[in-house]
Image 1: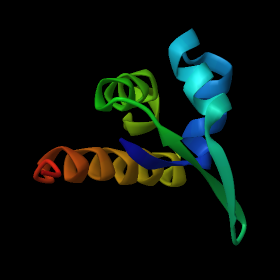
Image 2: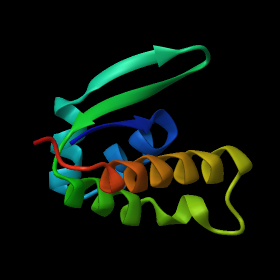
Image 3: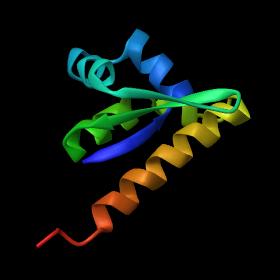
Length: 88
């Protein structure tokens, strides 16, 4: 499953994520967009879910608005990918 991970989350996970998440990010492709960037990561949906859990601090009440939005956007992308019918 290929999903775009917001750069703010990618930077956090490169520093604080577990080995599997960091390896997936290292294998991903960085895409510059305006002032920021995204990382296109191809990994099983379980790894995307793990990355989302590990970046849970970004969804907390005290987090900056940009961090909360990045977490919400990534969560929405994961949910949308899970709801897609399998290619058959």
